[in-house]
Amino acid sequence: MTQNHVTADADAIRVIQETAVKASRAAVLPVEGEVGHVVRIAHPDGSVTCQVLDPNPRLHEFSTLGALIAFTRNAIEGRHGEANPVVWLGEHSVSVVVNDETRRDVGILSLQVTPQFEALQTRATATWRSQTDMIRLLRLDLADTLPGDSTDLLARMRNVRFKSAADGHGNVQHGKESMGRSINAEVLGVDTLPDDVTLAVRVYAVPDLRTTQNIRCALDIAVEEQQFRLVPRPMACADALAAVGDEIGKILADELECPIYRGTM
Image (cartoon, rainbow, N blue to C red; front, side, top):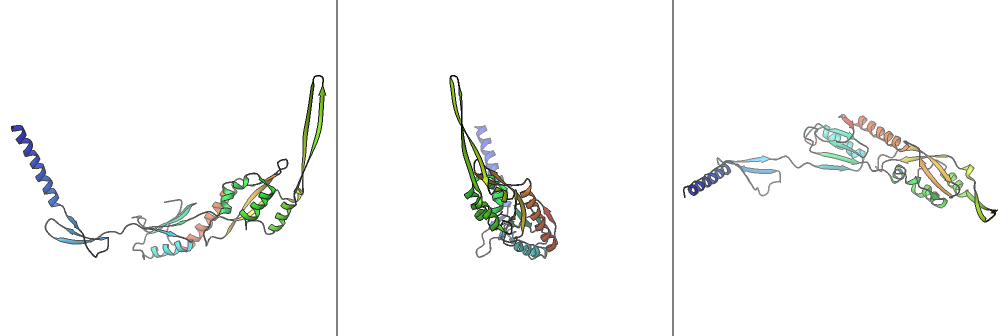
């Protein structure tokens, strides 16, 4: 019995302690008609105070480089409440942090590549294709990237003619007979095709980033299979990305007076 009384007394003391702690804490009161970041706090002494909380962090998404620059200028001038912006320039996005200390509000411009550049970067153009499919690739999938006189190149492609002839031969020996055929293949008009084709490719699908980069590709022909492929030269796509990145970096440096870093946040 004595042990039970001790347990009961200990439980009661714990409840009293918890109640006292809760009573000493401030309580947040619901406020009707106020914006979400304004609260009223009831203190243990009976007083009530009003407190403005920091707004939730915001993510701004831009569709043009010009919009990101305008937003960053406003941040530099303190129009977004803080004046400590930092810009990050990466391969896939340009980001601006409104205040590099709190890092709450962020603006992002996504750098999506164009379908033409993606086809070259992923080497989708390097798969072997029939003559008809190669002409379609040049005329449609890589539209607006061909050299100035693109109709001349397409005409040369259409004029290519494949020719093959089968030659038979026999080999007769005592107790064994074999027959074989060999294919002599040649292509007519191939001497009019260039070994390399330099494409003028727009890298990013951003409305105000319309400059193009030259990407040199090898035009390869498999005579016996009667197929073609277009293979970007090593580092051609990487060099194009680096060049357009330098272009964006120069625009940002000319337009903004704030730190600009290459990389991601």
